[in-house]
Each structure stands twice: as C-alpha cells, then as structure tokens.
Image 1 (cartoon, rainbow, N blue to C red):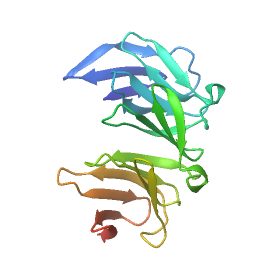
Image 2: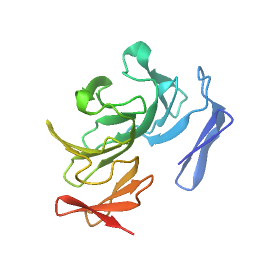
Image 3: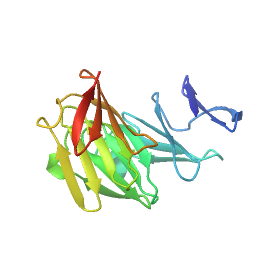
Length: 187
C-alpha cells in the first residue's frame, strides 16, 4: 500500500510503515499512486511527470516524453507474471515496458485514454479504455470488444476472480462479467 499526501510518499508493508514519509525529488506535481513493481519500487503517474518509480533507497526514475514515452499521463499500471510492465496512458494508448524498452501496442486502434489493466489466468492482458471498449492482448494478437459487445463507456476497472471470471466496472452502465465469450450485465 502507498500513502501519498502533500507531495510525500510512504510505503506500508507487512503491517508496518517503511521509512519516514519523504518528498520525491524533482517532482513538481501531485502524483497518483499506481502500485508496486516487481522490484519493490513504488510506481506513480500524473501529468506532466509521466511514469515515476521510487526505490526503497530513494532513487527516482522518470519515464516521460523526454525519453520517448508517447504520453504525459500514466493512469494505470500492471506488472505481469513475465516481468513486463504495462502502462495505460490517459493521453490514449498502451505501452509495454520490457527491460525499460517501450513497445506501443494497439496502434491506431487504441487511441482513447486507458483506465484499467488486468492480467488473466492465461496470461492475456485486458485493457479498459474510455469509450473505446475493452482490448485483449494475447501474444501478438489483439481483440477489441466494442459497442456490439457492451455499452461504450469508461471502463474503470477490470478484475479476474479466483474462479477465472473477468469482471468489468463501468462508469455509467454498472458491472459486467465476461462469460462464454460475451459480456453479461449484472445488476
């Protein structure tokens, strides 16, 4: 868990606060906590900082347009089981980081803000966007679920439960479950 207040961050792990609350050097705006990466670094995103990580020893790394990140605002983050890092961009698009090298995914098909990313039990990456539908990436294949599959709205959350059911939280049309290759509304 990450606590963020007045430009200061602090990490909570194993029922204890780790270190003192500290300001992140070189950051001029309030950051949104995104989670923790596979190396224990705290991950943050917000305009105009891009993607910011802070290691336990206080080292700060920034990825933004100055080092070719194709957007200024990272809105969601996922570290998958293979060590890839996935960044959803509010500016539109999805980026996969492999050893800090960028791969832009979705191309012209995925240009709307990305709000949520989830990895399923098969290793597929699901991406929820703003009025652009849901995208599923498996290896080199991409499938888009659009207006014929569920209402086009903001997809705020994606979650796979312990029984491998994919759940979708929307901004204005409630909750959906992906079942038998289709989305079913739950009220």
